[in-house]
Image (cartoon, rainbow, N blue to C red; front, side):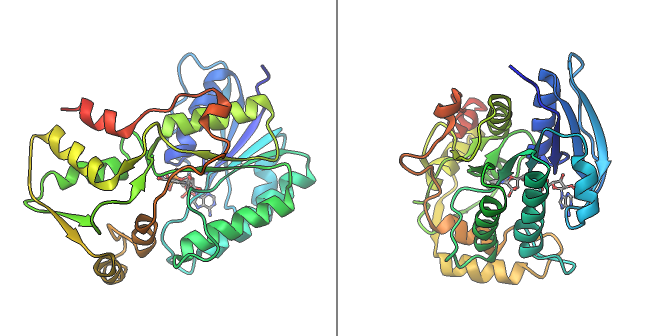
Length: 296
Ligand SMILES: NC(=O)c1ccc[n+]([C@@H]2O[C@H](COP(=O)([O-])OP(=O)(O)OC[C@H]3O[C@@H](n4cnc5c(N)ncnc54)[C@H](OP(=O)(O)O)[C@@H]3O)[C@@H](O)[C@H]2O)c1
């Protein structure tokens, strides 16, 4: 197996950090590219190396410098909230296209991280931008692999932590009736998947990465409550109310819930039939329901 020299844009983020650790552990030379040097724990027994190169993906020279010497690149940059003049279009379409063009021109393999449920016709500007970004990346770099992870869970995550926080409430509000089917995926499984894609030299594919189980939102809430030994009533709340609440919350600097998240929760968010997935990569992913239950 070969260990490519890899630039990870967003290598200090929730997913990027795990990927950098996994790649360095196996022997890759990893270049972490982000605006701020974050903490990336290089495993003690790592046979590879990690270096940081400061880069803003909106800047073509920064992107070129970050790619210098790389065999492969991963775009794991995120933007979940538009603020400070920064738009979803800037990061998920324009910067994604910039990285795709520059990697294609330099004959560098690319894994572009998108998300499950992308849709050019979505009510959500975030989901539309992710769909447009995928299309632009495929055009600019036809050999790129696009991965679409489901919502991520893992240590210090946002999703499972929010489920556990619900256990403290006297009454738990559900999104609609809590019937939306989800397939949360462990961050380490996604990192392993991306590493295997790179190590096997896979090209030109779209891979959907969901966790082991498909669960209704209500089941996940119930599992978190059971684990905490609490049984407050579950109250259905219409999505129209959630949309209104998230619009109100958008004036906060760090809103606990965004309109885009509400819209994503209105539809099932699961791996499509016939999609390439973890099975293609020989990975058996973890199941959030089991993880929540084990904490009992
Ligand atoms: N988290 C989830 O549940 C989830 C689910 C599905 C898909 N995804 C996708 O997975 C990818 C990674 O998500 P994540 O949750 O790990 O993100 P994250 O924790 O928010 O990390 C984002 C990373 O991007 C970097 N970044 C942001 N703006 C940048 C810029 N202008 N130039 C260079 N670097 C920049 C950040 O570092 P600096 O701020 O220092 O630059 C950080 O390293 C994203 O594509 C996301 O949409 C995530």
